[in-house]
Image (tube, rainbow, N blue to C red):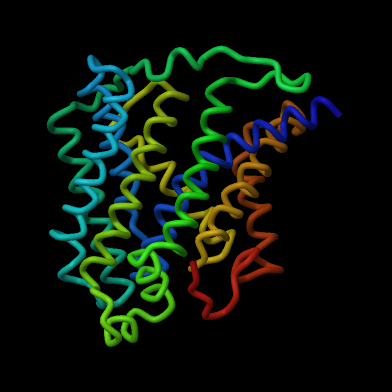
Length: 293
């Protein structure tokens, strides 16, 4: 039982990291119908920003990293996505792919292709005993920060005027605009929140791996997209649910697969997702036509 509990804690930590990524993707989809694959490049920018400000105290560095990534997210919205707002899903998708490649190319040009190392939150590298379980301090930080951010996002969407406007836009963007919701403000706010989640995910991702590359955002954004689809497109809480289910599948298969089958872990994880979607084609918590926050 202790081994199962230990694996559940590991899944909770991994799922929290996945949830940070998935929520940034799901928020933009809820409002714009945009799957932003350039979200991975926001994570990459956040990772390199950690190096740029590494000489400063960590609290200052974290604030600057979040500010830089939010600024880049707002620039993406203004320069790349505003002009194609309301276009077909294919156009939005191709725009996000093109932007992703452009930003990756810029990173290769200015930072080089060689991996770089970064020591972030090194003080959290140790483990501690919690109810008889060995839990990494970094895992505790990831779980705690994600919980606070999830609660903060829920409060923001339900208790602030801008959050209510974002929810209205998610329900019916055209009707919300006709009723006086400022489209530019709502979309920019969605990109800003998405950027903030990407920045925090970048901090924890670099703290976990210690490595930076121009392509480091590719796998996280794919994992985030899978989590959004698994949970149910168009619902933020469903995206978080999908992230935790995906993490649970990953950790449990890693823990209990026979040694000879471990190389096929990822294939089996996605096979499990396919099976779930066979019975729940719109995701675990999704419904046909449902776009809600």
